Image (tube, rainbow, N blue to C red; front, side, top):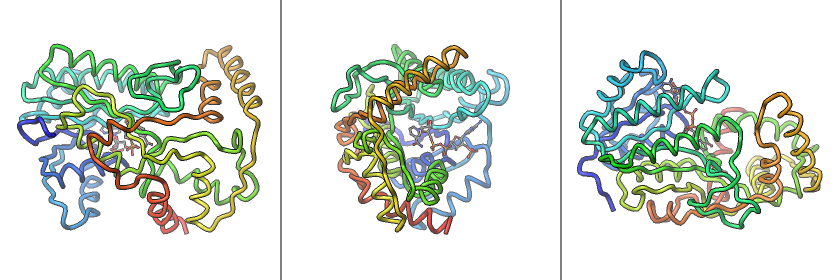
Amino acid sequence: MPVNSNKRVFLTGATGFIGSRVAENLCRNGWDVLALVRSIPKANSFLDSWHSKTPQNINFIAGDLFAGSPSERMQLFMRCMQDASAVIHLAEAKARESEFDVKNIKTLGLLLEAARSTPTIERVVFVSAFMAGGLPQPLPDILMEDVTGAEFPDPYYQWKRMGERLVIRASKGSHFTYSIVRPALVYGPNAEWITGMLKLVRAAGKFLIPLPEGGRALLGTVHVEDAATTIAASANSNEARNQIIHAVDNGRTTYSDWFAEIAKNSGWETNVVSIPKGIVSILGKTADALTSVAGIHYGAYLWAQVLSQGCGYSNERMKSICGSLRYPTIREGIPSMMKWFLDKHP
Ligand SMILES: NC(=O)c1ccc[n+]([C@@H]2O[C@H](COP(=O)([O-])OP(=O)(O)OC[C@H]3O[C@@H](n4cnc5c(N)ncnc54)[C@H](OP(=O)(O)O)[C@@H]3O)[C@@H](O)[C@H]2O)c1
């Protein structure tokens, strides 16, 4: 059920893999979208690729989230938020960029300050990531949104966790509520992040894909369209008010299911070879011990647990916000992703 009084939204990350689908979904659902983008030509090329029936009630404003003094950026963000009822924040500096976490946190802080100074804003949607809440020990079969556990010490999850806390804190005593969406592994056409992995599977998958316990652990997945629907709907859904929401499909997909489905849709051979869980745990603990000497902390043991044990993620909130999923499992979702990849990289 919608709560916002007007349907004007300020969106960041609209030229990205997920953000472009969020923008399209918002337009289709009657929102007026103002998107802050670094490149207007790139943004226009997305418009050209949309289905001709999609109403294009979207405007772009050129700008860089991380450039300029704090007061210049505050002014820019407040201009973008003028008369808007919602903000959806997807853009971020990538982990490979220097000081990416500091940039992301400072910029989020400015966005939240701008939202607090803009009385029309009723909802701030922050796109986080699954596992940002940490992993309970031992792992449950199904991880609920409100459960917290051992936090991943790697900088990406630290930024997301800190971002979630900032958003929740800023909304307290403010005129806006929050929605935090934690997508699982997002896949689908245009998933550039997946290109390297697919090329590797094509080249070497027939020889060896080493996976803990033969890849029987659960891997959370969500098709980009369902992730985008959840994010867009969170901008004014009452069910999403002050909620953390896992965006994950119904599939309970395992790692081996994932590679089998890729093989089925590509004709490639894949040969999954099992590595015992005990060995993976020892490797994780050794990596943690060695890297901590150098002052680096990525939580290799936690990752070893994720890869060998896995766990399912509840998507009850997601379904209460956006109804049934268009791609409930990878069986429905992977064919279009593989078609996109094979067309692009024959
Ligand atoms: N993909 C996944 O599997 C996944 C899973 C969980 C969570 N997430 C989260 O979802 C969000 C979007 O991910 P994605 O995969 O769609 O990322 P993406 O394709 O890399 O898109 C990132 C977007 O951020 C914009 N951006 C980066 N730096 C900017 C700057 N300085 N100023 C303005 N805009 C800037 C990019 O603009 P340009 O086009 O100009 O580069 C692009 O529109 C991220 O917060 C990510 O952590 C993703």
